[in-house]
Image 1 (spheres, one colour):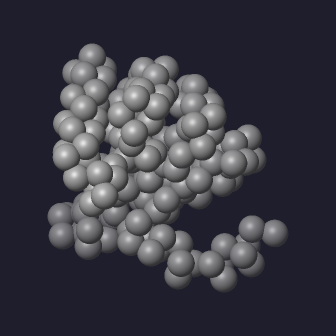
Image 2: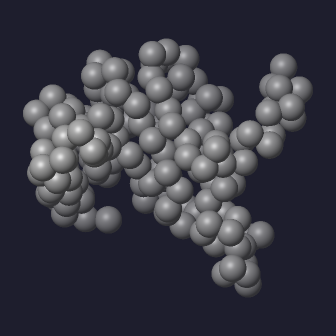
Length: 162
C-alpha cells in the first residue's frame, strides 16, 4: 500500500527480470511490474521497462487497493500502454476489493478455487462497459486461464449486451 515502496519494488523487479532475460534471451521474455498506486509513475516505469529493459508489456494483479483500471486516474497508464503498443496482462491474485458476501465463511472459495475466476473477468468487463477499450482502441488485454469465466459466459454476454 505504500506508494514509494511499490514504485521502488516494481523498478527492482523489472531490473532483476531484465537481467535474467539478458542471460537467456532466446529462452525468456517478460512482462513489467508497475505500481498503479501512482499511475504517472506506472506509465513512466512501463516506458522504461519496454524501451530500456526490453520487456514485452505489463502484468497487474486485478485491482490496486480496491481501484480498477476503468477509473479515470489510470488514463496516463493507458496512454503509455497504447503508445508503446504492448499488451497488459490482468492476472488474478488480489483478494476481492469489496465485501463479497458469497465468500463469507468459506475461505476455500477465495483464490483459485472460485473468486479469481470471477473477479478478474469482472475487471475485464469493467474495461469494456466503462469505455476504456473504446478510448484505447489499439490496446491489447490478456486474461489468463482461458479467459477465466468469460469463455463460459459468451452467449449470455452477447444476448444481454444488446
